[in-house]
Every structure is written in C-alpha cells, then in structure tokens.
Figure 1 (tube, rainbow, N blue to C red):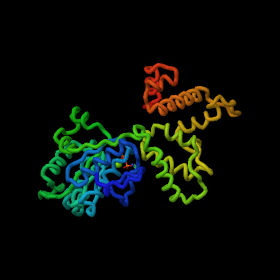
Figure 2 (figure 1 turned 90 degrees about the vertical axis):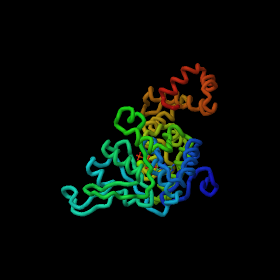
Figure 3 (figure 1 turned 30 degrees about the vertical axis):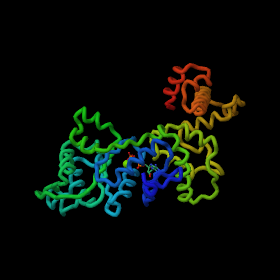
Figure 4 (figure 1 turned 120 degrees about the vertical axis):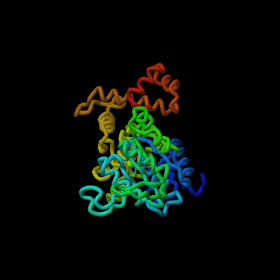
Amino acid sequence: MTQQALADDGAHLTLRPTSRGKIVGRSAKLRAVVETADRVAKSNCNVLITGESGTGKESLVAAIHDASRRAEMPFVTVNCGALPEALMESELFGHARGAFTGAHVTRQGRVAQAEGGTLFLEEIGELPLSLQAKLLRLLQQREYTPVGDNRTIKCDIRIIAATNRNLAEDVAQGSFREDLFYRLNVIEMHLPALRERPDDIEVLVAHFYKLAMDMAGRDDLQGFDDEALAAMTAHDWPGNIRELENTIQRAVLLAPGPTIGASDLPMASARAASRTAASASFGALPDEGINLRDVIEEYESSLVRQALERTKWNKNQAAKLLGMNRTTLVEMVKRKRMG
Ligand SMILES: Nc1ncnc2c1ncn2[C@@H]1O[C@H](COP(=O)(O)OP(=O)(O)OP(=O)(O)O)[C@@H](O)[C@H]1O
Ligand SMILES: [Mg+2]
C-alpha cells in the first residue's frame, strides 16, 4: 500500500479523496478490503464485490475507479435487476433505429457510454440467463452487438460487478452461468455487514453527524448522549451503513436537542434502551410503567455486552465474569445476535 494512496487519519480509509466522498471506517476488516481495492485499482482485472445491501459496494467501486488509470473517463452504473429482460439488453448494448416498437432513434447503451472507463454492474445475480451469455461475450472478447443491429462493436471498458446474493449457490442451482461466474470472480472482495465490524460505528456516526449538521443547518445540537451511542453500538443494522446514515440524518433533523438521546432514534433497540435506562440499576419503577420482559432482556444484554467487551470477546473469561458456563453464554450471544 502506497502512503499516497491511503490517506489514513485513523478514521478515513480512502484510496483517494474523491467527489464521491470518503470510505470511512477503522476496523481491520474494512482496512483489509480497502487495501485489496488499492492493489487492484491500477489493474484492468474484473472484480466481483459481495456484501449485503447498504454495506458500501457502490462506494467502493467508485473509489476503485477514482484510483484507477481510468479515473478521468466515465464511471457508469447499471442495475441489472431494474428492467425486464428486453429493455435490459437495450439498456446495456443500445439499439438500432426500428429495432423494436418504439425504437424511433438509435440509442447508445451503457457499455458505449462507459467507453474508456468503468462499467459497474449492480445486482449482477439478477441478470437473466440469455443476457448472461451476451455479457460473457463482452467479458471475453470485449465486443457486443446492439439490439436490432448486425455490427460487432469493440469496446475498452473495465467491468466491476456486485451482488448481495451467493452467486456460487446460484451457479449450483443453474440460475447463474458458471463460466460467467469465474470470469467475473477473478478478484472477489467481500464487504462485511456493519454488525460484523462494530469498530466502524463510532467513526461513521461522527462522519454522518457532521454531514447531516451541515445539511440541516442546525447549530444548536451538541451530539449524541451516551445512551444513544450505546444503542447504536448495540443495534445490528440490518440495512447496514445506509440505515445508519438515514438514522442520523433523521435524528439531526428531528431531535429537539440539545443532545440526541436514544428515544430520538428509530430503532426498537434504542427505544427499549431508553425505556429501561431508569431501571437499569434497579432504579425506581417509573410512573409510566415498564415492560418487565424488555427491561430484563435489555439489562441482560447490557451486562453480557460489557463482559464481552471487557474480555475482548474471550468467551471463557466473559462467562466467568457472568457466573455462567461458556456454552450458555455462546447460546445467549447467538440468540441475541450479538456475535
Ligand atoms: N465506508 C463508508 N464510509 C462512508 N460512507 C459510506 C461507507 N459505506 C457506505 N457509505 C454510504 O452508505 C450508503 C450506502 O452505500 P452504497 O450505496 O455504496 O451501498 P451498496 O452496498 O451499493 O448498497 P445496495 O446493495 O443497496 O446497492 C451511501 O450513501 C454511501 O455513501
Ligand atoms: Mg449499490
């Protein structure tokens, strides 16, 4: 990794500061992905990026493009699941005038628009089988034929694909071509879910908070209180970074202030944390009452989490701190989806 390529102030891992923003994080898992991205950026090889929705696949591809020799050339994105088969073919490869009803003019496809640059194929797993064959030809020969045309057109593009599916499984089931899979998968990069890299949450919160404050034009907010931060750390973020970004934008817009508390956050876990706070240390029963099961569950989670954090996730030691055996703890962590 070149020093120049990786501007790293502890929070921002970025291949190159770009207009599309920074890749923020400090977990070892994200760092490993960014380091691989840096290594492949200069090459022309096909890359397949996997990861759940909202984990930053598109951001990573944009960063790879911006760090590549093609940076000044177009960066074109196509969502392979967005259109029915016939329209998708013309979207990708363009069509000749009169190719089908409604094709009044010749239309350039996305492949032609990306000439010299990078073509990013989102949700590649959704591409119908007939188009997979045409994409394979594009990958192998760097050539294609527009719909309703008989010319063969050569192109110079780099192709990066992404999916939130398990393509190897799709191959096994026959819905994805094996030869295409191996062509795309020369380099596979996996963006872990946010719950698998909780170390990134704090710096992402700070990053999105700053962006949201600028956008909302608020100057009266003084950040998050401890309870809100704890709730965000504990939440499992099924929508990953996009969910975190939206959560913070919403809180910055709507929180009465001066600080953002857990009850200003939309996640159920945050509301539960706020409801249980009063009773978390066997405090008085609040006037408005509680939900006993939720309180106990939250209190249990909080103590388990503290034990795990204090022992750096050594489950033997954590179990000892909690006076239970390791198996019970492992089951509890699994049930609470903390691990
Ligand atoms: N590491 C990161 N640092 C800062 N912002 C990020 C990071 N990762 C993702 N984002 C932001 O989170 C949002 C979702 O990211 P992105 O669109 O890249 O995800 P995706 O994996 O392509 O999602 P989908 O599978 O739904 O297409 C975007 O607004 C993006 O800017
Ligand atoms: Mg995307």
